[in-house]
Image: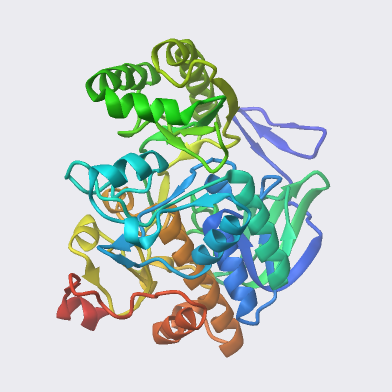
Length: 463
């Protein structure tokens, strides 16, 4: 096989190319480097900075927020255990700040009950327990919000905490020396740039950093969704129609969901902006969120489905006669790709049985996240947080909502700052210290099991 020299200095070998070593100027040095500016990443960066560390946050897009803003996943849910709110901390600050802007809506405590009256009032806000099998589903603490409001609050939190933010910086490769991550290289309009740190936190959603650093991972695919919003909707008329004509409304909505090719029970929800509704559809399977060719196909498929259904929505559904396509999410809603196989792999049984761990550092709905599930095997000075944490594919599908991922991020940021402060490896940080500092920052680390938790003495001893 012949080998030719390319003008760039690359060597072309048939179907592959060997490049020269990359020379990347070091543009930043900090105690902690967080890669990925979504909900988990911002939480990690802010909590690390508040813990006294110098922090650099890298984000590939032009704005912070990830799936909460660019992906327009516009309801915060999966954060209650009965009447108890289990996910607290930085997520609370988002809700409070967006509410002051008029860009977050949630039911007051006295209206979080199961009744037809409350369902009629709050159901179309998405503020219900979607795990419940009763009808109507009970209203619970969940928050509908605006994507631009999320971006604004993200900017404020990052700025106020002193995080060094670098947007338009697409992670390329980790810098690994003697089995420890020392920093990362990003591609930018100025070429490759290196950012060095004592600890790196991977919040990319697909363990881009950890997988390329040599960490063990599993890979699976689940649903992808390209969310869209409609404007010009008379939501009062639409709700009145479905409440007065439930059978006819169900038939119309079934037809629309069929044309979209899949959606949750309610394919449209209200938003804090009058006349604007959020459409969490279409749901599509068979696409790989790490393959650019597959993602391109998904983008076209989703936009075709959205375009094909608009006329039916306007003609068939009362209240939507003047609806128009306001926008389509900038970011594909990918739910699952690579999953870390860390020091502990959370199982579906762990989640469904509410298994408590002695080293729990964050909580989800009614489940617990052990610190070991944020730690890669065989790679030092690296933490992960977010939907790609160490779990089986079946467990991840029921434990990957935005608020629990934010809690993971907050725990990872505190762990990273603690490791720097104490001069130890992140895997040697005492989970009890993380738990204490999580509480200091207003978050529940899950160190105290709820009454319905499964406390397994064997598991606790192994933690």
